[in-house]
Amino acid sequence: MTQIKLKRIYEDPEPTDGYRVFVDRLWPRGMKKEAAHFDLWEKDVTPSPELRKWFHQAPDERWNEFAALYSKELNGSEAAKAFVEKISQYPIVTLLYASKSPDHNHALILKKYLEELMVGDR
Image (cartoon, rainbow, N blue to C red; front, side):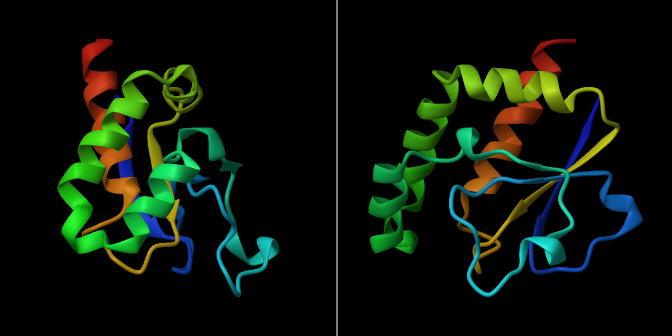
């Protein structure tokens, strides 16, 4: 099974990162694409623009509701299912995100979704 890790895109890449996937819809401020060292930019598995904007207005207060709504989006997403197929061939995949918060970001929810889906496919 693929091991999924999380890391801010601003952190230096390491050999233990494996296949590095940037999972934000928008490119992070102040970062040059050449400096990011990613293998894939997967915009289609990110929260919808409406959900992302709503969440960013009050991330701490809206976290639980955001997690439920984003999980619902993922469950209905063909792109998310296709993403599992793309990454299942790699032993280690690191999801890269730009958020400053390690506790309230969509990559945490995506990681959980991917792990649950991959275990279900066994």
